[in-house]
Image (cartoon, rainbow, N blue to C red; front, side):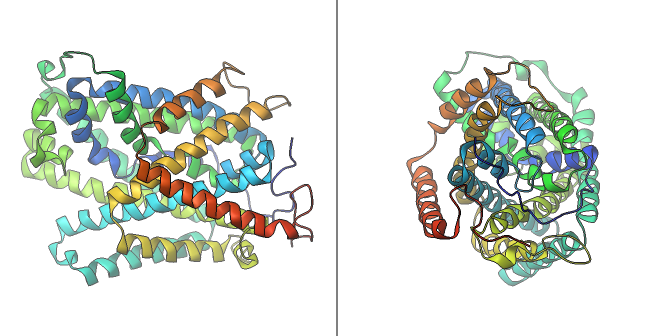
Length: 441
């Protein structure tokens, strides 16, 4: 087994607890997708749409078990980057880190565009190119400043945003439940496995999140116990909420949920049925809060991968700098903010999501294989199913990846090829173990 990825990692402060980490997992996972995907699932699967949620929930739970066990063993910044690097060696870890950062950064850009669209829906004056760019720049820069001032502060802001986003969604479920018509949920013919797999691939984008939240593992208190508990809380909460939202929306609208006129805002269309125009406005506000909450959590976690890669000298050394007063990777956070701004202003949700989907699933696959390698040693957390779960998880991930488009594979493959060349270019500065040939400070 390879040595740990960053044995000389600069000392960050461990200030994030179970609740903070669980809130980050929930916050990152519940972003924009829950507000638009119910319509896509209904169009593809009809009343059987909740089955796709169950498939994705099972796949996510299996991966979560693998990541929880790996996270309890390797409590370092970078999350999956550190796990895979420790188990499978520096090259695999580097590719995983690049894919992880790419997937979540593209997701941040995609969700930022949805955030701006939602704000423009509430305040039409923000819809122009210049006001939109100003809004995105101001929000992302503000979140970067908050996180530079301290991981605890960034975690607290993420926790507040989590509460703010969950209240409207719970209200949607609670108020809409009495308006559900059981005939709208009657299952007709069972969908083919092929169609279920295609829908599951699209829906998996809505379940991504824990891999990004765990990038702050180097700042979690008692990570060996906190990481598995936080994953259990976050993933369970997300699965229950998603299935409840789909059932209520489909139970209220029935076949109308898949209609083109409701595709852009299916929950708002359902809310009109039991709360009128005020209900639609509430959902729009919830969408703004939810996407903003996603950005708060990812701005906390994603720069830590840049930081971890720089610590191991795969990226320029200044990205590994830690702020003397706030003890945060301030340069990595600032650079992350600039990149996300550029992507958000120039990109679109669908194009960004396609690449992010394949990138993150490849990270999940690597984590499943990594925990199998780590399983030979003692560990603070032992998953049920032991040696079987990683292979079942890997099989489900491969089945989902098989449904990805050729374009997505070409883009992901191109990034991996470029990353491989970058890794080879850095080999001269590394010792045989994969550690930097000169100490970090």
